[in-house]
Image 1: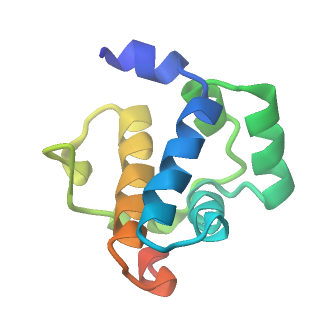
Image 2 (image 1 turned 135 degrees about the horizontal axis):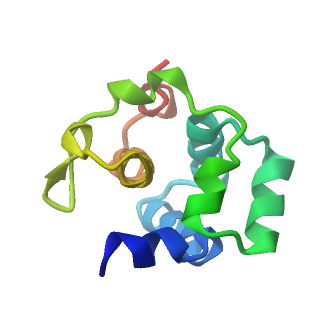
Length: 116
């Protein structure tokens, strides 16, 4: 799948998969929402609005109120690629969210996932 196809894919199509990944490991949807809001600056209402509007990944991140400055601390491997080495800024944001949800699903405490 090309980056362009991923960028145009509605975020609302991926959101349930992120929640399922966490819930399979005993985590809550609210924790996934907290991770998304921490990374993007959306509040709960803003996140719900973006999901209802079926915006693309591209739009979801472009309209994010404020990407968390601590996002640069997110490192590690997702899908065999080091998050910190990804050159495309949008793909890096997408993979950062994947990495945070992976950490949550692996049982890492929410405070550590959020780089508190």
